[in-house]
Length: 203
Image (cartoon, rainbow, N blue to C red; front, top):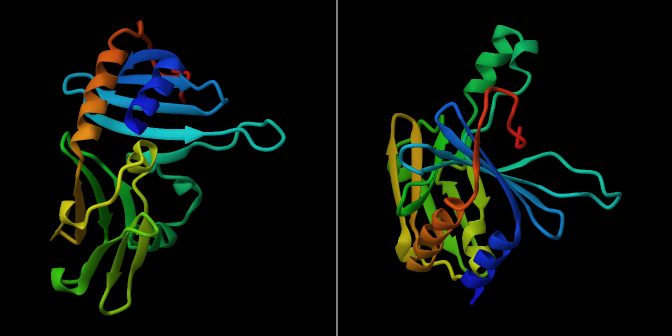
């Protein structure tokens, strides 16, 4: 029922789409005033970016909050070379999904794989990452499961480590896979404009 509820809210949203730089950019305006922006690969329909913004108590729009995708560099041009180098050495957390899995990458983690402990906390509905050497700790939720009101299952979790990057995958429940397929059908109904840089409403 919750999955159906999410799909219905997407169908009820005002949607605009733009094809730009090989990406299909979709902007959603929900009846409650929330906004969601997504970017899909034009050829594969892979989700590349999802971000949200909501109005504050005074009715003004807040900043975009990234849910899926790689954060854009901010203020790099104003930093000196030393600061940029130091910043690049810090762990970078980002989400980049595949068709069948939610996936998070934490870059700049040079420790061996056996140092990492990754588990599900069903009570807090989140995934917890820690290291035995106490050098890193991260707790994060899966908003998709919250929207669909689906439980977290530790058996769906897998971990890999390569090139100083910890890769955490969570197999998508069949309900989410089905809902994403329905969403793609819904998006095909949205008239898509073609534009150049700066034309997209989601920017």
